[in-house]
Image (tube, rainbow, N blue to C red):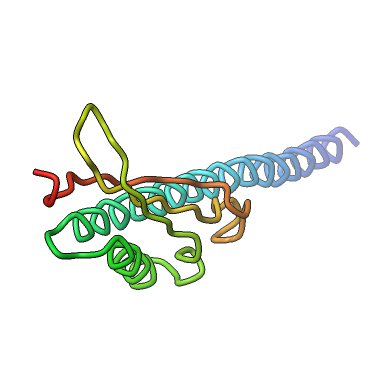
Length: 134
């Protein structure tokens, strides 16, 4: 009788190991997915900033219209990420400390679940000194 009690104790221990593994795995998978998602958000943000800055530099060139900077920005975003993220691109001239600058602003979806997320939740800008004002 005593031997049977020991065997059932070992069985319970094996069962608890499976439960512990499952619980730890859930936490680790959730942590991994969160880290990947944060990386995706940072990648999208940095890519949008780079595209906006390049578009502003393009528009700041001599004999180039502001609209050309918007088109350049949209093209870069479409090539790098998705054309869906390039729908809200605006440009304008701004005065920063007495210097005329081109500003390109991109408003895009903030990716929270893969590339799905908050519509217009992420806004970035790029600036460049207007060469014609120098």
